[in-house]
Image 1: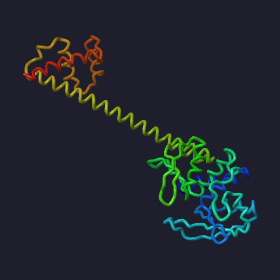
Image 2 (image 1 turned 90 degrees about the horizontal axis):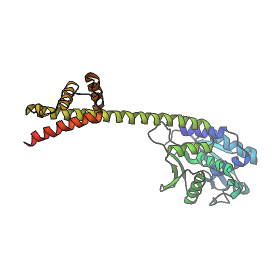
Image 3 (image 1 turned 120 degrees about the horizontal axis):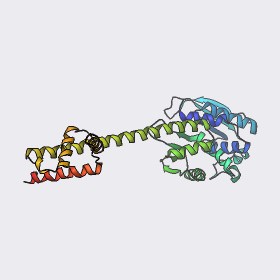
Image 4 (image 1 turned 180 degrees about the vertical axis):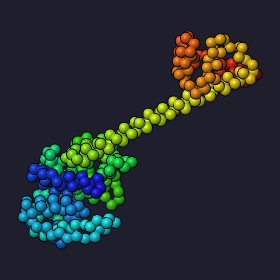
Length: 307
């Protein structure tokens, strides 16, 4: 079962106040339903969604939906439920924000009168045309596809009431309202009220964040190791140049000491080497002090190279 299907099932498993259910159905039929020869049609692949819609029309309007199963035309292996009813009284559709023979630009204001009803409407739009990538995949993505521009802008405005920063993309045959940020997608799921889906999403997101943090630390640690090896290799090269030119005697005693210990501990970092020298000689030397000695070695080696 896909993550999107789990979200939709959780939406339809919840009990909502009547006003929120009406808003949900409005969002659903405005983005899924269509009129044809005095019949109003709706489609879904999801059995739970089909039962939710069927139950609503039965209880609210005493309308028994005619439900049939047909093949899906979008290359999906799932069967498609085709729901329809003969609507002689267009007041039902008008009350749900669809209109007489044509979808209204926006539903009546009472349908999305408050935040609770807006949440309901967004649930309906998501049931009709929404999807969320499983957070285990490489990218976070939520989208809802709608047919016309005015509905896309309307849904975008509803989403952005909750500061979700929703964007719209023209897909040629329709419009995609989408979210890309993990935090915003999590907030959207909270708005839908799908608590199980939110917990799963957050658990996976925390795991990803921790994994990425560990990888960054490992990369940083590896970079430090590489830097240490590179610095030590350069110091050994400088020492070799000085020795080849019999120039060790030109160094002061403290710098000679640094030379000896670098050859003795070729893989030690500057900090580690300063601690070793301090411990073995009894003369404390800091990392900065040791670095100053190696600069003297470098300067002498470069003079020999020039000559």
